[in-house]
Image (cartoon, rainbow, N blue to C red; front, side):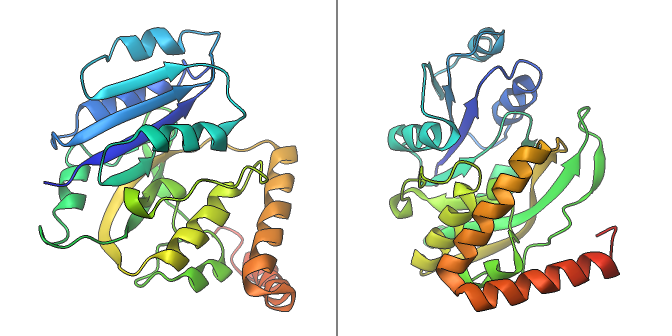
Length: 245
C-alpha cells in the first residue's frame, strides 16, 4: 500500500488547526503521516498539536521565512510516496478519502500526480458549493492558461517528483509550482473524486492584488505575454457574463 505524507504549515492557527488534525487522524487508511511545520506560534496552536501526538505525526515549531519556506522544509522530511499540502482549516472530504484516492489506480501503477475536486465549506464544515473552477478531465501544464483549475490542496504529487517552491514568489508560488510539476510529470491521474473540503476564508484585498500580479507574471513566463493578456481579457468577459461563477 502506498503512503501519503500530509503537510500542514501553521502560524497562530488555534481557531482552525484542530479540524485539520482531526481529519487526518480519522482517515481509515493507516498509511498516512502528518507533518506540521509551525512558525513559532504564540497562541494555543502547539498545545492543540500535542493533543494529537502519535508515531505518525511529526511536528516542529520554529521561525521560518514564510509559508513556502515552511512547505519546502516539511517536504524534505517526508517519507511518503505522495505529498499532500493541507492548510490549517482544510480537511479531507470524508474519513475514507485517502483510501479511495490511493485505490483509484492499480497497485502496480505509480502516477506522478493525482488530482480531484474541491468542495467549499464554512467554518462549521457545512458544504457551501463546489469550487468555481472545476478540475479538467485531462490535466496538462497548458491547462493553467485558464487559471488555477485544480486547487493546490487537491493536487497530490509523487515525492520523487517534488521540486522546492520558488521563494521569490510570496503569494502565488503554489501556482508556479503546480505548473512546473505538471510539466515535469509523465503520468497524471484524475481520481474523479472530491478530495478536499476547503475553508472559505477570503484573502485580504492587498494580498489578493499581489497574488494576482504574481500569477500574471508566472503565466507570462510559461505561456508568453500575448497569450496571457488575451486569456485575461477572456477572464474579465467570463466574469461579466457569469458573475456568480
